[in-house]
Amino acid sequence: MARIRSKKVNYYGHTFDSVAEGEFYLSLRSDPNVQDIILQPQYTLIGAFAVPCGKCNGTGKVKSRKTANEVQCRSCKGAGESKRRPWTYKADFLVIYKDGRQEVIDVKGGFTDAKFPYVKKMFEYKTGQELIVWKKTRTGWKRG
Image 1 (cartoon, rainbow, N blue to C red):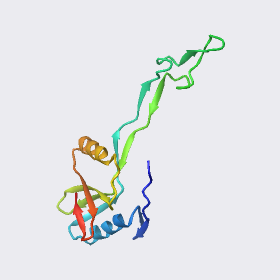
Image 2 (image 1 turned 180 degrees about the horizontal axis):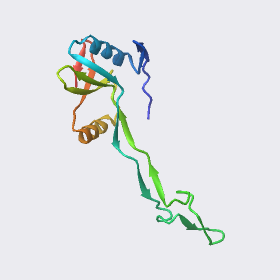
Image 3 (image 1 turned 90 degrees about the vertical axis):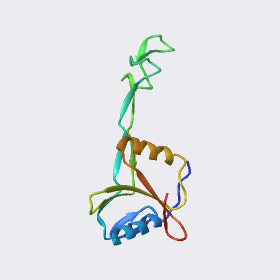
Image 4 (image 1 turned 180 degrees about the vertical axis):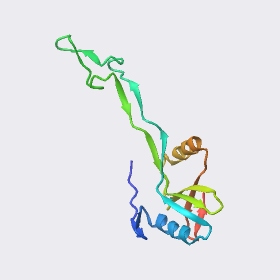
């Protein structure tokens, strides 16, 4: 997977991953309707879980090819299961407005990762909240 080469910028003591993200932060700060801006809130889309090891069928032991004795499974290290890490997503902003509404915002400067539509759909499914995407254009900001 290719890395996105964007220039990091600093505004008001906060480091942003791109110029577009930093400029959007400045526009949020100047909006009189905004009460609070939380930077990079993290959401868990799928929690950590374990699956039975396919090599040892969940027993943690396999027969050695050399001695035919039961030895510890190398795939699961004898645990009988393989652990999977949680799937987390970090949005760019959580904006809380003075009227009480909240928006989760992701800023795109132009390039959209191929897996982003899946992340967006899973986020909306798990939280029941729309993930709002703003894109920087030549004329300003466009809600996508």
